[in-house]
Image (cartoon, rainbow, N blue to C red; front, side, top):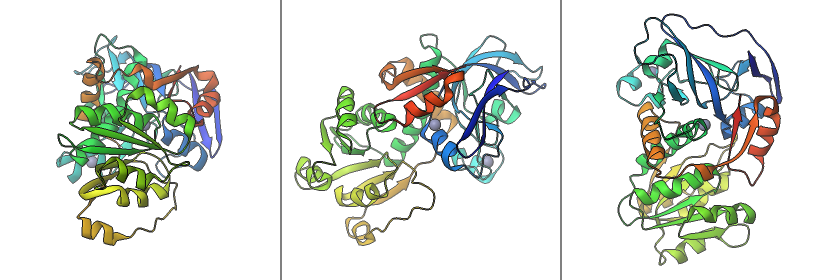
Length: 344
Ligand SMILES: [Zn+2]
Ligand SMILES: [Zn+2]
């Protein structure tokens, strides 16, 4: 089969590799769509301790079951399935506690397990039994179903902040993730959602997702503007959906007393941020992280997309065949695109 093989930092090549073979406990999926995630781009440029090249990246996927092992009960040949990223091992104490995205082994598709920038992807026994693999609702196409993975990560983060009825929510970063948080925040009860974005063109492009206010942080001070938008009190919930250390510090100043801050976006490895933690102390802030998602979030994401809440189509800006994977990565890194889908 053809696959985009990651060979080391800044090296990836579309080449012929042996077809993966399904054993009695695994399934083989013909990949129809696999979206490019910010983390794929980070691995491509900087590597990752969980990815040993040569490896096939790609974890926001959807396709059709081409072969199912004799012991597999959950899926059969011909089933349309969406595939997420994080695979709980099912056996460690975090998996036992139901927080498999914090699994001690931390398996993921496109990391330790070969991913979906390929014609076929093998879902092994652990993935089939415990992983984020779900049937695609009939009204969704493969591209829409692939976006259940990033939406699942948004659902995990939103859950951790506990948005309440009437809350004001700030999202720093208007990339695909930041823009997916907008409708989910409203559905969770937010009265007002404010988007902060450095680049003016990206901010303008995010207006279609109907936040209540947009702040261009390269042209105006985002902290004083958020205070202005919130009667001087600050926001109840703040998400940092970008890779800038500065936004972590800004979030503290934008928060209302007892506010919740979710540091969604990872920073480049090795970055460190200086925070005035007295602000957390005196304002009784709650600061959380967010790492991937659980299989149940992936299922919830499919159900929500199927219900049109949100309509996921506007979150797809480009499509490329597998041969053009480099162009796909470049488009995803650019400052105007939303999700870029690779079609093997
Ligand atoms: Zn992803
Ligand atoms: Zn585990």
